[in-house]
Every structure is written in structure tokens, then in C-alpha cells.
Image 1 (cartoon, rainbow, N blue to C red):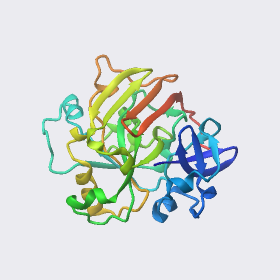
Image 2: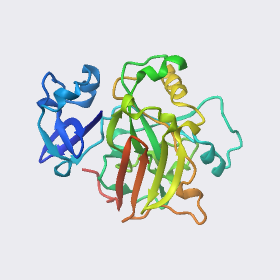
Image 3: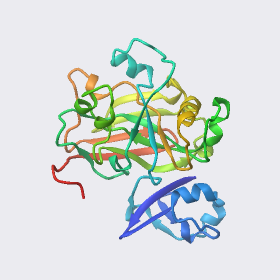
Image 4: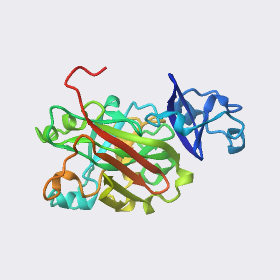
Length: 286
């Protein structure tokens, strides 16, 4: 099942993507949830009930982040190919690199990514987003997949110059509307074995990154177990699982994002997240 948040006219809604339409959740019999987080907690309706709801064409809506973003935890250098291009000698560290992204550093599918005015090194990072489906606190690795509700595509847009100011990456990872997630949230049962899925990133149609999810240094269960060891995870929280090699910073010559370019992050059985890059204003964000 595919779950989405969207704006139609001036109305923010959530619902279920069926073919090239979206069915508003509140129009489905028995559904009382008004947010995706509530939907996850309430439980999803049957497909037959969704078919009774009000469907509108996807072309008539603007997709938003597929879940209300609160806690977004990211894993860094979590693919061997990215560690190699970054010249990190340790193949498998004991613990994953972890940092956070603020909610307002994200946009949804189809929205413009804002290249920071203060940065000359704006880069892409195609990733898998893991969406938590049940309260997770100090979870064992062996039980961790039980806490996965579903997946989405993720672009961890990074201002490399700001990221490298110090050993702490937070500034370079949190410029306003510099990253994205979407286009929707696909439930784990529909995706199947996520480890077999291929993650591909393209810039203006040129393939820059490609790897299988199972190539990650720290697996999905390991990430959930590690993160939940220090912070409680709630339904709708997101873990971004890291990017493979091929980022613009390590290309020869370097290939940072420019206004007018389009970035696509595609994951098998999940979808394609597509965003255009535009120049950010130096004025206060609205």
C-alpha cells in the first residue's frame, strides 16, 4: 500500500495512492485519522474499503513529505563504495555515524530543492528512508524489522563546505529545504525483500549512484537497534540509511548541483523521488 500527504487547492490531506489517483483517507469507511502518523497508529484499512473512498487524480495534487516529519535520524558513510571514495580506511566501524536533520530542511516530491546561497558545494545523496511503525525503545537486532512500517526515497542534500567546517556535520546537513523525501510511503509488505532493491540516483538523467540496499555497512536492523538504544522511536519517525558512492564531491572533476538541474532518487518497488534545484534566497525563509 502507498500512503501520501498532499495539498489539493489549499487543503492539506493524507490518503492512499491507487494507480494514478489518490484516495483521501477521511473518505474511506472506518478511517478517522487525519495525519499519516495517526494512520500508522490506527492501522491501515482494507483495500476494498479504500476503493469506496473519494479518488482524485495525482496530477491535481502537490505531494508533501509522505509523513509528518518530527524525528529524522541519518546514517553517514554507510555504504562501502562511499567509504572508499571518501578514503576512509576502516571498512566496518563498530558503530554507525549518526546525525539528525531538522524537519524544515526537507521538501516533498516535485518541490524545488534550495541550493544554499552560502554554499558553493551543494551535493546530492540518494538514500533509503525507513519509517517506523511502532514504538521502538532499546530494540534487539533480531526483532528490529518488526518495527518497520515502510519505506520512502530520500535525498540527503548536503552543503559540503559547511559539512566540513568541523567534525560535526549538522550545519551542512540542515540548510532550509535542501533535502527531500518521497514521493510516498510504501508499506514493507508491498516492497518485499528491501535488501534486494537497487537504489539509483540520477542528475539530469545521468546515473551517478547505484547500489543494492543489502550492500549497506550497517543493516536496517542494526540501525534501528542502535538508534533505539539512545532515543525512543515513535510511529512515523524516519531513519535515513546512508548513501552509496558516486556523490558529486568525489567525482573528477567535482560535480556539485547547480540551479536548473533535476535530481532523481529511485528505489525498486518504492518509487522515484524527483526534485529540481533552484537558488535559495538570502532572505529569511517564509
